[in-house]
Image (cartoon, rainbow, N blue to C red; front, side, top):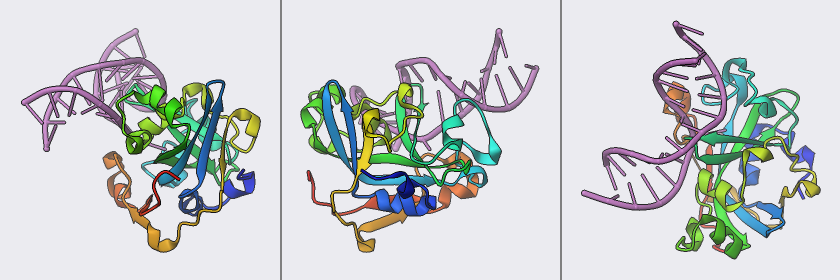
Length: 196
DNA sequence: TCTAGGATCGGCT
DNA sequence: GCCGATCCTAGAT
């Protein structure tokens, strides 16, 4: 399991290092694990795309201002839950949005949550889909991913994603952020072996 | 109190 | 490629 020190680092580095890691969710129904393929960095008060831009402190974003290694969950468009991991800590207001990955364990359970006709690779290849496949809800906002009993944690199984397999680009859906929408803070792992 | 709009998805054309 | 779903949040009044 990745410890708190993994998250207590610069957000861009955490984002890059999250590629290829396993996100594990255990509930009474069973366990689902996702190999992360796509993430985005949100750089806090100075990042117009971030929920904490300008030092905004509202109940919704309280978790994002907290300790590194906690899950920040929010609802978009009234129906999709997005899962973020708080980085840096100490009130930095920064986080990494987990945008997608491949379900490598618990496909049957993930498919039950997502729908019977969903293809393997589409089970968690988007922020909302990832949330649904892992049964993430607003109740999960603020849980500690460095504490296995919380039922949500990340681990490193040794798979290495070299720099040549990482693509960077602008973040998705943040057109309201002006110039910051172009910042290359989206990280994608390419050519990862599927299904492992 | 009211209102606008959103870090998306999937179905339809 | 377009559009509707759906409801909470934040800011304005």
